[in-house]
Length: 626
Image (cartoon, rainbow, N blue to C red; front, side, top):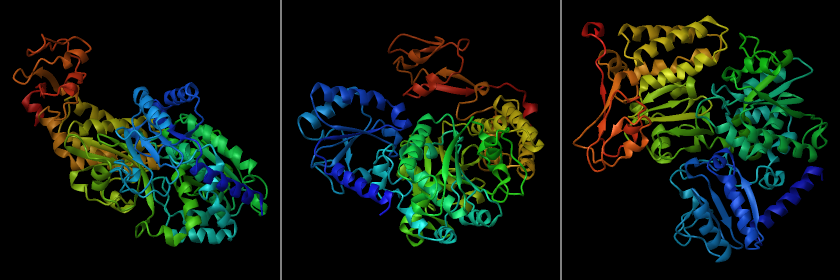
């Protein structure tokens, strides 16, 4: 019996005692999303309540379980009862919940969100039957929100590191074979078969080989990798052990953005625990495999998500992509064979090695096996972190899981700033690598941004292209110069100064950049523009020919006015106007002084009676619109 086996036996015993609790357990969702919503203040209130009433209870911080719109989440498990979850908890509702649970010994049924059993309980529905959670398949996220991410024993108790121990019983080539049979593709965006990269690296000559975990998640609106690390860091670290063993690496590096302080802290804690349990260092668990992990904090450059730029950053150089070949698997970090895997790719490995390739092939579709995590954000009713089988239609993700949009759906952008904007006609498109690529978009690392009728598609294209243009390393001309020219054209269009010829110029520039840019950032940078030109061409033409922004977003194309017939004089617009441009007595139609209006859109967004209109401004002669 090795050292780890003893720890596992002890951990499972403690886990059984936890589930068969003799005192109340209070779970608080304390990942970044929960903390942003006030979870730490709730922890202070909970501890004060326990002290005031002299109650012995265990308070446990857990990670993100997924539905960010319900944060902060507080769960309570009384002895002999189900774990009950409460959502959007504040100081007032917390007091009621604690009083009901801890002093009266019963759940607060009116405030309860769900429980963690399988059948309805006194009018409280099962948590995983919630509309956002029911369609999901949780493999990568299986522990998130359920275990203490800073307690290695809880990870061991739910079969953590079992996949790694299974791998150690095989030859490295056989581990690669299992990953091959499972059909795992890289979850960082490109979807390249994981086993193929590993095989090249393992067969490449070199005494020193490296494994790098790419946690440089830089897409606006994306938080999948951060949430997984904050909620279940050992899953990612176990995946690194498996990958390191398979490719013959002895050193692992986690490249993570410095803007993720909680994720970094939890990684550091988890790595320390691994060393104490004999899971890092020389001859791990009595095998011939030696491996260690260190953390490298990145400065936040988006381009460093690209493999060769990331390697340059670790080496202490400026993060700039290099032309390939040689590929990193042959000559990477310090010119040694190197594998770079995404956080989610590594977090998936323990599940495959623990349950087998045949089990994993039950999920997803042919050529796109398994699941994918996504950050679902934007104008969707239920934003959060989700995990679905590859091949799930966009319609199911947006409307069944996300709850749809409050206004009319317009578009979804997949793949972050390098992805494409897809219109309503693609709602039944299955989410897989090939289908998204055929539509002009990409899977990316997993960001999904939902847009409704209040979104200006031209403004969105400009925003994302401006982001990638500013994040360009500037090394190659197509990306450095081409994206700048595209941003200038889009800027003219949103200011009412565009011409029909600009659309051809945008397309020509976009195609040239895609073909000529050095790295993936440049090659995919035009995607938001090219897809919006393809699927929302009329909206571009409205900006150019009619000086009209249908979403009332582009300031130079609109001026606001009050529709007297609809205005009830509720004064909501008066309260939010920062310049005092709107005035009028209560219950009477208001007036809007256009000389004071800064077009901040606040009145337009807050008005519940549709009494604020955004009209097109005629700013150019008719002949210039031809």
